[in-house]
Length: 429
Ligand SMILES: Cc1cc2nc3c(=O)[nH]c(=O)nc-3n(C[C@H](O)[C@H](O)[C@H](O)COP(=O)(O)OP(=O)(O)OC[C@H]3O[C@@H](n4cnc5c(N)ncnc54)[C@H](O)[C@@H]3O)c2cc1C
Image: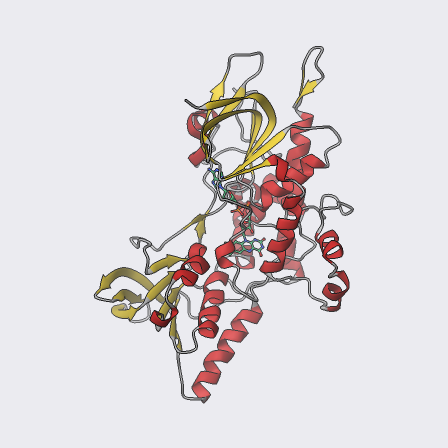
């Protein structure tokens, strides 16, 4: 039988990546006490750990941390972290807005260590249902926990389950065909002596970082980079373009017409999607150029090409590559294929369960979402908020770190502002 907890939480967060970590801090810093619990299916805080390749850098400024844009004097800021670990002067000497992802991960762990009492690890939320027995609606969450199944009740739920890895159509993952989201775990478990030929498919930041990493880590191996474009394209990180990530841009996007939303996507996709940092592009080009000079070419770029089939043939992974340039296909035999083919947006339906039927949809069948990130559910008292999966309503920052401090603050404020007075018993949020 499922264990039911007696307490009803004001807020339950599903997933504990940077978004809900930022929310946990916003609740901690809230002017009124809020009872909260977070459930994370991984065994510990882990922010794209399998992509923490050495030297990979953040694509946002360190000032777009968990808190600073909401509360610049928070004790949870990246600067507070640097101060506490004793690296602030050396960080500043480096004159670089973009720390490595490893350092940022260390910062996230540092912030999380101050909040552990709110977080349950190894706990996967598998569904939700509505409890309508008392004076106000509650959500009951089913949780698969190391100690057995659990039921938890909440007045508000914040879904932040993250991006969903995407493979090329028709291609399945296995021990020799990996997705970038599992890259380092697979790489470390693999016998390196058997990694002589590796192909990496994709034209984005992760693809380029993996190609660079493999080239440097496997000096005897040949690396093939297969991409649908004519070469890697640069991520626009210039100041005017960066304004699409400003908190104010969320209002502009939210209030905009469908034509203005389309224009923002059309003109500014290249700030984030299928683009690569300048420094990584130049580093790869230089490696290929140096190889040519030394007549030892082990880095090849297969441009305008798509992977259409993968199969195991004896000890090889046979990758069928279709060239858009010649409209012909050829086979490439490798030891391992890495698909750095991106992610689909967060899918709330996976955890909403029967509550999905209470959500109002727009004309295109997508969820309607209030400006405060609350799903439009006119028949429910309880709140269901989204951190992610809201590109169609709130714009480009939906799946990024840029706006998490402000977004979490807005969600925390909304939950407090919608609190219901309880006679003789204070308020419920
Ligand atoms: C390699 C990589 C690098 C990136 N670098 C940047 C960057 O530099 N700057 C930037 O702005 N963005 C970056 N991004 C985008 C990325 O989406 C954000 O960095 C960030 O991860 C968003 O945080 P999140 O908490 O919303 O989602 P996530 O970090 O994905 O966290 C979601 C969490 O939910 C958990 N979960 C899922 N389902 C359940 C469930 N049913 N029950 C319990 N737990 C569940 C998952 O285990 C996960 O820990 C990067 C993405 C990748 C893949």
